[in-house]
Image (cartoon, rainbow, N blue to C red; front, side, top):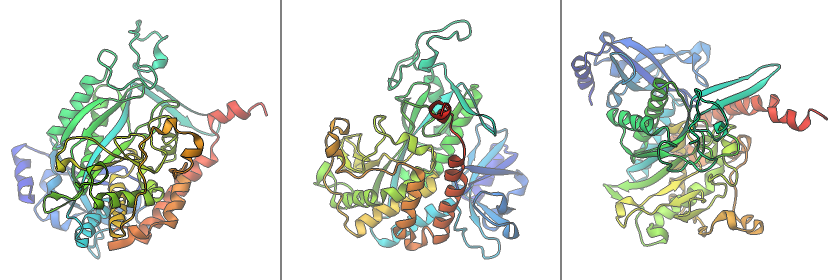
Length: 470
C-alpha cells in the first residue's frame, strides 16, 4: 500500500482518526493519535514530532524531540477503536533525519539489509508460535509491607473444589494436561477462534490455534512464515489483538513467560529459513534433509545462544520457564523431531520448501524486532564461519543419566547471566552496524538496573515460608 492508497482507504472506510504506533526499547508498544485531516502524503516523508525523552531507554530531556514516520504498508483499520486507522512507524532524528539506532524496528530493518549485503540470502522467513495465558482475574502488588499475586481461571485445576457462580462443572484441566482438550473442558475455543479470525482480517496469516499444555487457560496461535520485519510487525499486532479480544470478553491475556508455578510456561518458538531468488537454502541431503548451510546456521545460533537469550528471554521471569521438566529447552543441542532440544528440525512433508528449523528458547516477552534480528545475525555468523553444530541429541533428555546430560551445554539460568554473556559475546551483532555498541550497552544497563537489581532488592513471598522462623 502506498501513502496515496492509505489516504484513499481512509476516505473509503470513513476513518476519522489515525493511530501512530511504535515500540519502545524494552519491547512495549506505544501510540498517539491524530485526526485524519492531519495525515497527508507529506506526512509519510516529513514525519510527526513526539517527545522521545518520555520513552524508556531513549533520549535525554535535552534531546527529546523525535520523529515518527508512518509506514504505509502496515496500515489497517483497527477492529477495536472507533473510526480509526492504525500504522506502524519508524523513528528518526529530526535534525540529521537519520534512522534512530535505538528504534527496535530499525535494528530489524538493518538486519535484513545486512543479510542481503552478504550475498548469502535475500530473505529470512520467520514463523512465530506465541503461547499465552487467558485468565479471568488477576491481582498483584508489591510495596513496603506486602508482596503477592493472585491469578484465577475457571479452567484452573485449583478450582475443582470451589463454588463458581453457585455451581462447578468439574471440567477443570489437570496440571500439565491442557494439550488439545475438547470443549467443555476447553472453555476458550470460541475466544481463540475470534482471535484467529480477527488476526486474519488484520492481514496476519494464521496456520492454526489450540489449547496448550498448562492448566488455567494456556493457548497457542501459530503465525504464518513471513520475512523478518513483517514477522515482528505481525507479532506486535497479534499481541494487541489477543489482549483486546480477551478484554472484550471480560478476561485478561498475558504473554508473561511463567505466571504459574509448577506448570508449563509460555514460549515463542521461532521457525527460521533462509531463501535466495525464491528458492530455499535449507533443503539438502544432510541430517534431517537439511543443507550444510542450514546446519552451519544451527551451529551459529547454538554457539551464541547464551548471548541471544539476553534478547530472546529478556525478563527475570523468563528463567523460571527454562527449567527441566516443563517442555522448555534447557540443553543447547539440536535434533530431528525431538522437542526437548533447543533447536528442533520439524517433520512436515518431503517438499523442500518446508525445510526449516525451530529455535525453541525464545519467549513472548521479547522485543520481536531485537530478538529476530539477533537470531538472524547468529545464523549468518554460523554460515560465514562454517560453524559445526556438533552431534544431534536424538534421545529423550528426561531419561538420560545426569552424567550424560553434563556433556551438553546449558542455557543460562538467569537474566543476569545472559546479560553477562551478551557483554562478552556481541561482536557478531555489530556487523553491518545492525546492533551498535550504544544499543548493546543501553540494553545491558537498562535490564540490569531496572529489572535484575529491582528483583534482587525485594523480598519474595516464598522467602517467608523458608526463613521467617529463623
